[in-house]
Length: 140
Image (cartoon, rainbow, N blue to C red; front, side):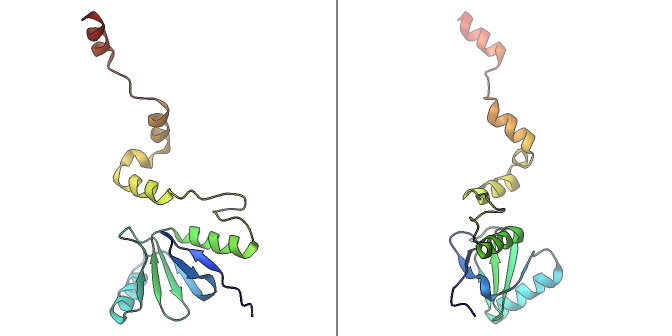
């Protein structure tokens, strides 16, 4: 057995030992929600979401349940890249932006942020003044 600890960032600087993870699941199903509630009642729940929406539920070999606000796929990719000695991020050679949570939370609040085409249009085209107002100011 290796004496190395494989530490995985689960968001907001929170770290778990990859060697202790038994399961990494989404919290969408009723059985997972039941597991979360039971862990909360037993005092075995660690909420690392900082008040954000729970996206991943990490089940450890010691019975602790850890809630994370990043997607299970992201955590899994971090584990795989750590084991393969690749740079952190979703895929080999990629880097994951630190601001991805802010973008996801903004997308939940603002429907325009959900549509990448509209988001690109807004970023590329600055808001122009109304041509009628522009003519009025020039004539004054």
